[in-house]
Structures are given as C-alpha cells and as structure tokens.
Image (cartoon, rainbow, N blue to C red; front, top):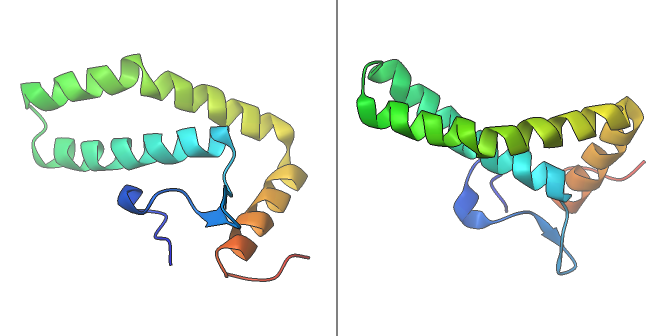
Length: 97
C-alpha cells in the first residue's frame, strides 16, 4: 500500500492514473521537503548549510506550494471533501459516498 509520507513510493494511483491533482502533488512534495528540513533546523539551529537549503526552498518550492494551497483553499470545503473521498477510496481506505 502507498505510504503518503514516503516519496519513494510515488503518488497514489488507481487504474493506472494518478489520484492526485497537480496542486495536491505540489503540496505533498513541499511537505516532504519542508518537514524534515524544519526538524533538522530544530536539532541544529545555526547550521549554514541548512540555512542555504531553507533559502533554496523558500525561493522556489515554497511559493509553488503557497499558490497550490491557495487554489485548493479557494475551491472550498465541498471540493476538498470530495477530493479526500476520491483519494481514500483509491487507496482502499473507504467507499465513495
């Protein structure tokens, strides 16, 4: 089964097609990069290499994630609930309603 927190397993697929929209992929990849980076910064708050990696993230991927998040948020709760059902069903986590 797909582990949503393991980027090596790739995006969830159903019937040979990705279950995730492009915006959902952008957010997932940003999450997979940002969370470990923040954890490492918590352990080593004054590491110049981590600062450079954070700056690289903030200058590029972070802005893409913000844009993707805002587009998804603007679609509203009903859309997001429907998307969640699609992904859960595709991963075997429930039945579509």
